[in-house]
Image (cartoon, rainbow, N blue to C red):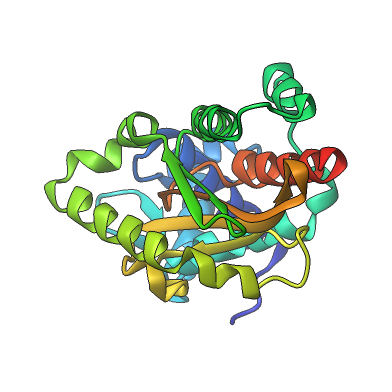
Length: 243
């Protein structure tokens, strides 16, 4: 992987953040205006061309802005994970209180828990209990609000990714050395997804009553990685503390 200059790193991170927020190709003019780089549009354009040439971003056509590639997303996510101490997100009080309560009805607890995480992450969420071999899914409404699903082929691709994860989620129990290991897979980095368009954030964890399981967030590659990685880390920590 080519070494990037500090300026290129900052431009790439700003471009990925902008694309995640707006879901539109990002122009050099916009970055020079919003990025606080003190660089001319021409200089930004030249740097973006270099990032394009080495595969971190791409351009649909010559007059369009740039979009992150899988390589660009991976760089962005690795930077986030390297600064994991600062990634933790605050979990709304309602979710925490449910975790602390020690539910009388496991089914109702896991249904409401999975729904709460889906709403917070704007993604499809999977909660899997290994001991009981039970899988919950929620967040269809939330994930389908993403603009990616305006493309007709995306829905079929997403359903394939869901099926791949459903059929293989148990196998993730053996892929983690500890519940603190949140993993992020982008596109076809994880072959079970059978898709290049979606990303998976997943971790082994321990649910209430010390039940072993897996928590997973599945959404478009353009998902809010900082928020969702932090959300996952915070939830795992809270579950551990209250198991």
